[in-house]
Length: 151
Image 1 (cartoon, rainbow, N blue to C red):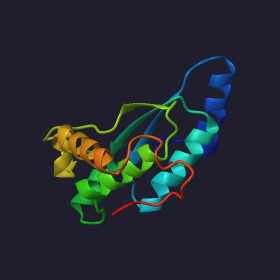
Image 2 (image 1 turned 30 degrees about the horizontal axis):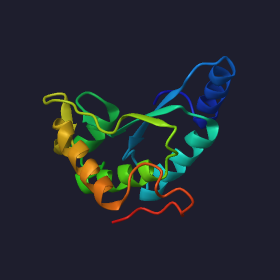
Image 3 (image 1 turned 135 degrees about the vertical axis):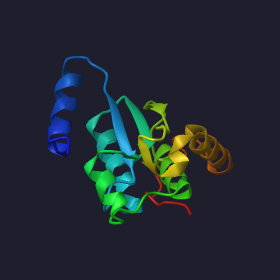
Image 4 (image 1 turned 60 degrees about the vertical axis):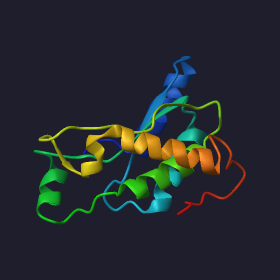
């Protein structure tokens, strides 16, 4: 509900970079209707457009929002910690080393946060991402390979 689409984002990035401005893109994983591969497609698009940095975080369902009402009515599933970690790790591994990750998780507190509960502690996501990257390879290690999510 932000009132713009990818074309508006792309135009803004191109204009900012043409003026010598650095661009940091915020990406949310777990949006309604999103499939696991969608986050990698989005990443590929923002990297190709020319982002300099990324702030990554899971979708938070918060009190008083349209998504909050849908979740309370049982019409909106939320991303699990495991799903988020898999998507974040795949995204980081498919990101060129020159793109800076400013954030890989975020948190919100109750009573504002409705779901997912694990988002109340950002460290759970950051530690799990760090551990998985240590086991399977760091930023950029999957470049040149297909965009596939590892289970």
